[in-house]
Length: 394
Image (cartoon, rainbow, N blue to C red; front, side, top):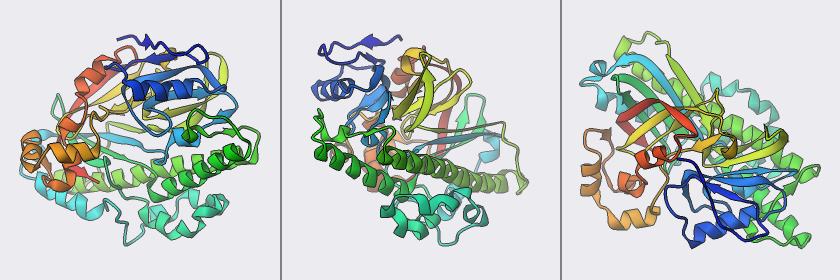
């Protein structure tokens, strides 16, 4: 479905929305706050899964000239998805789901846990060469960053084994830059807010404090941002390699399988790109790049379908699409409304935890993924439709 143009105040840039719901007053105000910033380029694009965030809406794409907003990128820098299409089929999984789940849970730390042993691949990562250049506020975290590389994290991060409509097995996971990315973001957001206060910059929201290109603060943030995005991407690679090794062990006797398709994409990040023939900084806060050559991953909730997509290069969305179903209720509200019985009902047929610790991730806490997909037929085409058979939550 094509976007609609929101009616906002005269002094703002346009806001183009692909949302599958009318924005409420809080969401409209947040969109308007961003659109009122003088350095916003052309318009703000809202994806179908848009919902409240901090400073900017989750599911928003913000192109800017000569400035960047650290809080719009957010604290889980480089958070994103990774997926592999394997040569295995559903019949090969029969009777093995629980064993595979338990082994993955044993090999990949979840929540606040970290790796006890650091593998050579992690130690040899090129990014460590530049760790000493990062913000002084994270220098004490070298050891933690090392041990967390190859760990899932908490909240809505997950690892899944899925089947597509042809019963082909897919591996999929969702994670970001862990504690080090969070701390880097917090350091720079604090600096941006301090600068805004010092220069008496008028902002519609303190969380929209920004850095101007050409300044030391901008350069420092951009350097740390790129490092954290690389860390996040490699973190997903390390975990996916472990998951693949486990699945190969169970389904092919340990013989390394050859992936039929691999996708690794960010959905909380910023990059320098060219749009409408101009070089701009594009911040995707809960959105995936969807150029014509791009593959992307749009997961539903635990117990719902997920989609592998290919971008259509829609210029009005700054070549972007949604990053998931989007929450329709907060974690706290979900825990109040639902119980373990509801969770068991809504995750029938899926090998996963079914306890109070994951109630906030119950499928009903999210928007229906089919509706979200219907809203972005002009942004992406569906390559594969997946349904999970194993789900491991952070």
